[in-house]
Length: 312
Image (tube, one colour):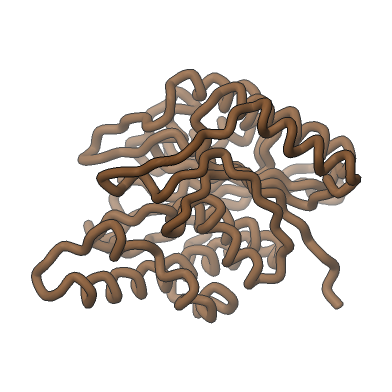
């Protein structure tokens, strides 16, 4: 019987759709992980819809929830996964919790998706308050083991722009020097050899050999673009990377290939269903573009590798 592996996931929650904890819970459970969730925000639906309602959890409320776990002696975790947060005191409290959990379990792995912003038409902008950036740089990234920024977020964290693959590798080295052993830039606008219809993701993993020396493995993945705006893909990516790096601890390339391939299967199924629902020639609505997670159960459990990574 496989040993229980437990994840504490602190992310957003929506009643309808798949973002944040809704995007992470089902895939991790399907892959055999026990997952406890704390909702950083609780909204009716994601903010890609015209309207939404809900609440934002504050740091005192997070502390109270964690204290309840602690009093019952059930605050034992193998992984912590974090995503979208809007409040800097909440984010600082997350770091305090992670430090305490790491004191209890030195093998705990913290997977951080530093959700701050993205690029649209070449221009980057933040969609969280700007006062979160110094908290990420000074407190969060130094305690993280795996981080999954997009290009814009990687640039924000390092203060360095990326125009070439070499500059992307330099940015990943800077991020390594800040703390994390595994860095994946989940999407970039670097030119792909496969053509304009492809995005590039880059990964870098720094490991210590038994003799104490460090070795860095780097990979590049070209991902076919899908002509639609999906919400929750970053949350799903971080959860999948957690799962597949756990299952392939000594094969970073395969872990990334399975993560990206599973993503591809989910997105293809989602866009096909959305277009069918919208009708010919009509643009799918945010509701029709919600990730088809349950329908993709088999692809999440055992993704056929259709996206291969190149070792750099």
